[in-house]
Amino acid sequence: MGGFFGVTSWQDCSADLFYGTDFHSHLGTKRGGLAIVRKDGFCRVIHNIENAQFRSKFASDLDDLHSWAGIGVISDTDDQPVLIRSHLGSYAIATVGVIQNAEALAGELIVRRRVHFTELSAGLNPTELAAMIIDQEGSFEAGLRRLQEAVDGSCSVLILTEKGIYAARDRYGRTPLVVGRKEGSWAVAMESCAFSNLDFTVERDLGPGEVVFMTPEGVETREPPLSRLRICAFLWVYYGYPASSYEGINVEAVRYRCGAALARRFPAAVDFAAGIPDSGVGHGLGYAAEAKIPFRRPFVKYTPTWARSFMPQNQDVRNLVARMKLIPIRDLIEGRKILFCEDSIVRGTQLRDTIKRLYDAGALEVHMRPACPPLVYSCRYLNFSVSRSEMDLAARRAISDIEGGMPADLGDYARPETEKYRRMEERIRDRIGLTSLRYQQMGDLVGAIGLPKDRLCTYCWDAEG
Image (cartoon, rainbow, N blue to C red; front, side, top):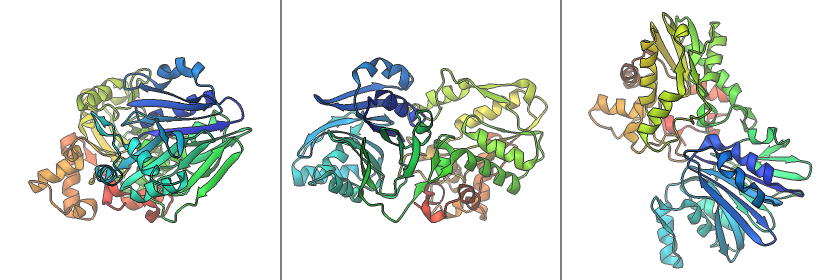
């Protein structure tokens, strides 16, 4: 996915920029980038952070990044921020999202405007494309509105200029964007948890499609918010950090409610409940409290050197990370019936190994209660559930096995009352090696979040985005 942070201040903002960006590191580990503006122009630093933490790569650059304004980004795709010189002036730009129609938009610009794009080994640079679209208009405000109208997918943007920072939330608000302030400084972030330890207080969330301009004096709306919100529900389930809130709703509180809903709907006779660390822990705590059973940690996570296992691009590396970072505690496992809560089952390959290790350590039964419905559809807005192949998704693999191929209509597999759904669920349970598997139902997930369903993007589960 990726994340970004921007700050303006009457004082030097380098420390806030550094730590504020670092608080988005859980959203991606491919590239990190910082850009600041000074009297003599822009300064930018980009590092590969696939094999090292953001802080360790950028700490030595801080002495060269003193400024009153800057933006930082954690990117899962291209090198960012990108420095641009155009008729709008010089600026640095960072984006988060997915532009599904990128090739079509680039082709139109090449033919009609006779522009060119840098060809990268990974393909078209989406941030460069976003800048090119913005530059077709006479102002940043008009350019950002044109970008939002042109993009099929989502695209949230930070633009650092010589006068301040433009922040634009994607057209349907699929990604969060929140404004914070402290004396003499204003900041914008995707994760509100970035503010707490930097002494910022949350002012408000930007609305869908809203564009603001931020200086040390304050934040001014330049393009008003649009009416339709479709924020990604998976943020609360998995991607979001527990201390963050989106639309005023805290992530950890939602996870407790998700777990409680699972306990009410799908109880099990077990010795204790647990959560696969880290994002499954909140769900597990909620389950245990509602079921009035103990919560235990039969696995502990070795955090000093192992990152989140979804991030490496190579599946073999993902599997290695997942295996090496989780250490089983045999004394808590042997002879026990265990129920695990997990945020989701995406591919299922890592989970299958985890369950086998529980049985190897003497578990009698292992039950699973994922906090969201099966991922029947591959995300087309933020790449949350995208694999190199859609068939990597555990649900789609099960459907293909049942059908002898992938059917055109998957609707019956997204509805828990159907026989096809039950067969899919059973197929996944058998493949992973669980005693029982019951997925969260959509109504319970929506209720745990607390927003109306028509203000949430649930495309991964029911193709309603």
